[in-house]
Image (cartoon, rainbow, N blue to C red; front, side, top):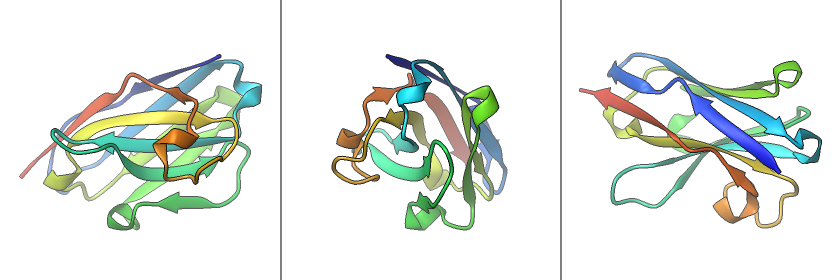
Length: 125
């Protein structure tokens, strides 16, 4: 089992920045990749960013490219999501997720075996 704990959410004005953290514990040796997702009220969970646990290509939702950056610190078993130039439409609960293998694509929530509890990000106009 892998446990994930997100932190770093909050309230920020449009144009501001936040950095989310996702600390992994437990059987992290089984983790192949990490993703960030978000879910706004009344909407489906949406892919935001992806990275392989040991490095390699990263992928982003088109609307966050150039503004968000996913990174990892394997020594700390932590993945980050740096969010700059935030917009009101970025408001959502943000979740990190861990996958042991990529079954159905990196953007598909079904790929991921483990999920954090989520952290709220609110961007005011």
